[in-house]
Amino acid sequence: MKNIYLLLAAVLILSACGEDHLEIEPRGTTLESNFYKTQEDYFTGLVAAYDVLQWGGTGGWNMQLGLLNAASDDCHAGGSDASDQPSWVAWDQFTLDPELGPQSGLWNKGFAGIYRANLLLEKLAESEGLDVSFVARTEAEAKFLRAYFYFDLVRFFGRVPLITQSLEADVIYDQTQNDPSEVYAQIESDLNDAIATIELPFTVPGDEIGRITQGAARALLAKVIIYQDSDDRMDEAATLLDDVIGSGIYALEDEFGDIFSPDNEWGSESIFEINHSGNQQGDYGQFNNGTEGNYNVQFFGMRDYVGPIYADGWSFCPVSLDLVEAMEGDPRYEHTIIDGAALQAAGASYTAGFQNTDYFIQKYSSRAADRATSGEPALNWGYNEKVIRLADVLLLAAEAHQRSGNEMQARRYLNDVRIRVSLQPITNAAGSVLLDAIYRERRLELATEGHRFFDLVRTDRAAEALGERGYVSGKHDVLPIPQSEIDISEGSIIQNPGY
Image 1 (cartoon, rainbow, N blue to C red):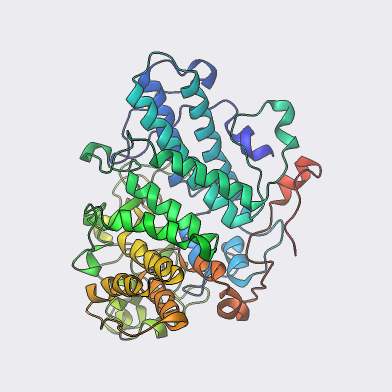
Image 2: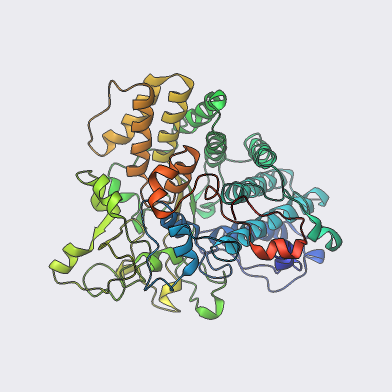
């Protein structure tokens, strides 16, 4: 388990997040054993836990958004050639093995976040003299973050060690994996505790944008329940999602194209975003999670691009022809997909990369007007990642209501999403036809946002959609456990089936 705790054994306090994300000044280097004294110190510890959400350079380029797009049928891996980022290609083509793939970075990131949340929760439990409301809210946020990181880990790996406290050095390497049901139970416990905390607000003021809210906690809990795929619990998920939808806090953007505008971060539709900052002047000396930029944006851009609107990028995640065909005629197409051939016909140019289709991601496109003017521009894109937005919640609610027997409400929520983009409502669909319509709408509405791969896996449709790429059910539902973790645990950690 070397990378779970040794990464942070003497916690460095800890880079602050971006200007729009819980901004505080860095405090230098302090050991955690003598750091937690003032309320400001505890808040710094909370910022440290949030900070992991931004990470994309853990042991290489391991941005979850891009990797999940590449693993799905929305996109291919791309890059300059097949050797550019072998771990991306391995997941795209399902040639993963214990030493080839993105698993080490994703494992390390998840457990780093869990470590920081665990440490903060322990220190809060030992604290004296802090404001009671501050403690309650901070605990709720730390539990949300621990749940969030574990939800990623259990979906990526299945059986993972369940660790809810700091470990002494002599037992770090003795940890064993828990059944996913136990991990999900802990995730739900943490999220229910957060929701039950009255100090966790429904809305936050402008200087706290980025902090967890009741809406985010309820939406994530519902997603966790739905992912476990028990029809008997769909009414629980539906109730949680109804609460978010009916809160009056969120509203669909009038124009679909406004959702991903850099000028519209934390817009009316946004429930949870990962904030990024482009003004930190970061360079490659700080690459390993030391900058606060969104690296996905650089990856998705067209290689060597010369022309209007966009900046050049690295041609990863070219959009698949399958998604292009699926979205033909859909009003969301132009806001989801860049037609590179049309740009070339108008006089622009770019270099075709690996698996080039001449179609590129629009939602996180690299726009020249937003390119950083100091530091390394590639590492300093300030675009936030939209993790949970209202359309996602509406479609999850439609699914939960359909599966719990309330098809009228399911159609209402489905049609809310369709009518926003001037599509005809679906009036008579029922049963599996309605459920398929909801799943199709999720793909088109949320295309290239990182949801598709997990949606395919949880609905048992991954083999059909990805079989031609090499996907095998029962194996590629999850990633291999990093071989380094198995080796250092001396058998305590066991490899996933098929690897």
